[in-house]
Image (cartoon, rainbow over all chains, first blue to last red; front, side):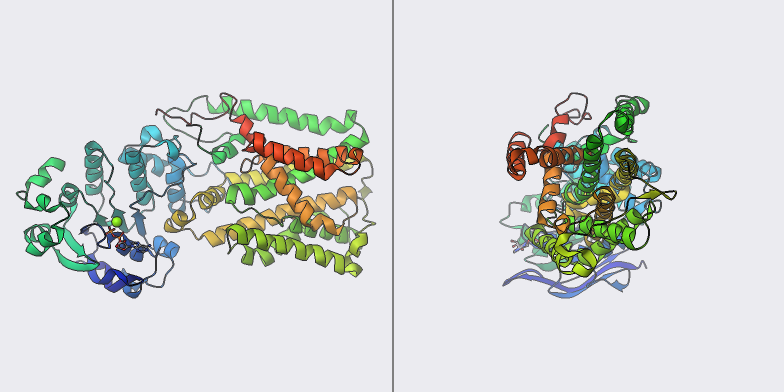
Length: 263
Length: 347
Ligand SMILES: Nc1ncnc2c1ncn2[C@@H]1O[C@H](COP(=O)(O)OP(=O)(O)O)[C@@H](O)[C@H]1O
Ligand SMILES: [Mg+2]
């Protein structure tokens, strides 16, 4: 019924002989809350980079909203509504929290790239709203270098949202957050409008199952399974993939309990 | 918390800025007063200098203003955008030759020569920057060095136009309303007026969303790309704007000294102006003004008295300054309480 926003078809990325992403095909419908999970080294971060364009594909096509964007440079994909947070924070360290978000917001709310510094009321209002949303309103004037790890993750989310994305890619956004911070994040992501399509990589399966309407499991660069959260939880193959990583316990827990803790 | 190299926030310090955080500190009016009033006093002092200073002093002040404008234009590249250029004198020289030639062959009516100097300086940056800003790091240094040498060589060899190594001389005085400005005081006022407008222009550029984008590129270029900015386009534009303002400074220089030499476009000039920027504190805009003042004073005033050891003295000043003041004169301002914003936050 709903249209496909992001479509990956036969997407691969090789590092020398290593097939970090190997012939991956996924369709993400518009408005989806899609989770991408898999053990470390499965190729999740690499796959995100292929979608954002920060790294070229070795093979395959990436389609956004019906348009083949495989050859587009990263900044043009961003302008088409692809926004991301990186697994490892990438911020403007010497600038204040507010100015970091403003860099993203000013492109959306610009008033004909005015030379007059004051004329950015719309962008500044948006920044303030986003900082409240992620819980950093008291830190607006703090330089980013003085933020804690968890706060930086929150700031990443605010910056990604300030791009007013159509497709939001979050790479382990809750890693390093306190339980309170991460449940706030889940609340924020749950409140996003359906005009934002979310693809999230997350090791915290509480977060995953609180949000996701569909899940893709990646293993050794390949898609093991795409399905509903319940299908994924029940899958023997998925449990197999996680064996030896110490994470199987999360799956073997009685399903359902995980959701309660978060929301 | 003082480990933060927040030259960018210092850059914004010149003017009041519409921060509306939860703890705004002193009111905007108060901040405007603490910054605006000293600036106004300085301006009045500068404007009245010819009334009580000797012509020689007015001339030195004019040189300082010109090199300060030149240095601030380079700071847009070095400090704001993060592109250290070793050939910025190329655009200064192009501007100086343009203004000189326009004055000789067409008109010396203000502000035609300086405006054309700025335009041709910007055009030269359009022509050369396209290649230069595609590279980064050492390659950018090498390319800008090469561009500077190219312009220097052209000025030497096109002697029928530029006067070659004899320099372009016989530049008539600036005219305002048909009257030539001959007294050093009047020329100084002209230089002061144009330079202040130039500073204002550069300050607006640095404070605008465009300037914020440049600082973003300086701090984290890959991230800017992922936010939808094309770093090349912005760096190119910054290069052209910097070239235009360097050209403007060059045009003023031609009006002041009324002779242009190939060396004004050469490496020594480029190195001196980069020295002024680093000495003053890159990225602050006002720091390089101080840096330029020191460089001009040491070179022009004390240099001749030291049997031509001016460059040596400058070298010593440079080494000591970098050692003592790693962030330039502007770094000293960070030590004055209240000068910096509440950077530490609540941590
Ligand atoms: N730049 C790179 N060069 C070489 N190998 C890489 C690079 N980035 C990732 N890899 C390898 O690709 C595989 C997938 O990595 P990654 O996409 O980061 O996995 P995940 O995010 O699922 O943990 C890993 O084996 C990793 O070592
Ligand atoms: Mg990863």
